[in-house]
Length: 301
Ligand SMILES: C[S@@+](CC[C@H](N)C(=O)[O-])C[C@H]1O[C@@H](n2cnc3c(N)ncnc32)[C@H](O)[C@@H]1O
Image (cartoon, rainbow, N blue to C red; front, side, top):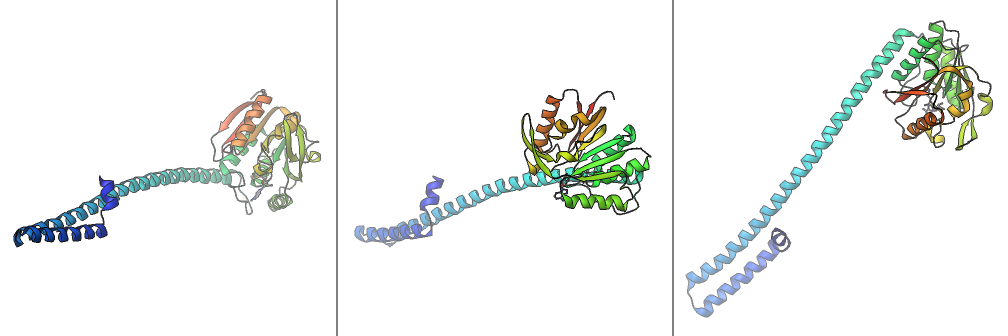
């Protein structure tokens, strides 16, 4: 009924209907000679009916708008709640990162400008985990896939804690290789960390084809105590970081640690799953950090 009223009742149709009614009532009054009072009353009835119809239509429109308003305000409320929840998560995350960077600065006071963290670079919470492992394990050889802020912090830790170790960072991009070398030089730790510029090249493994760091850059590596997998960038190929374990497994020390970043990316979760299937000797611990990471161990703790 409401729909019919909204479809057919409007100022135009009501005006036409009322005019017809008035004309009809007048004609009827004249033909039947029923007198001025009855004719006027009949005509007024038409005007009244027209007014009531317009009023009903207006009320229906108003009710529909109020209904929409309710839906809209529910939607706005849901959006506000989502924003509030995201803001809360971001605030907690920011606090954790500030806490971690403060901790890092306290353990490893730096004498020069530091590279930015988060985003493309490792986040402070993960760097803190890396440094914690360096302090505990005193590694002789650290290998990094992907250079940057992490390379510098690791080098600072080796120097600060008098660890007789070195870092080899594989880097596919000459610009980032130079940047990392620049930071290492400014902090006087170039002797501790070597950035190897290794362009990505095709690599065929038993289960597929990948692109990974040029073989010459890693084939001499042996006795790795800590492997940090944070490159190549995910966009270079599907499961871009998968080759790290197949390529470097033999170069790992019997008791070694592998830390892998970016498990927030589904492709990296798949990579970790494939690693654990292929190398059951590794135990794995998920680290609930900003970008989610995993720590893999082999051998006794
Ligand atoms: C995840 S990043 C490595 C980050 C490194 N571990 C650090 O803590 O800074 C992996 C690779 O991405 C590339 N990369 C680094 N920063 C980048 C940027 N801002 N834009 C594009 N590529 C970048 C570099 O080739 C790097 O080796």
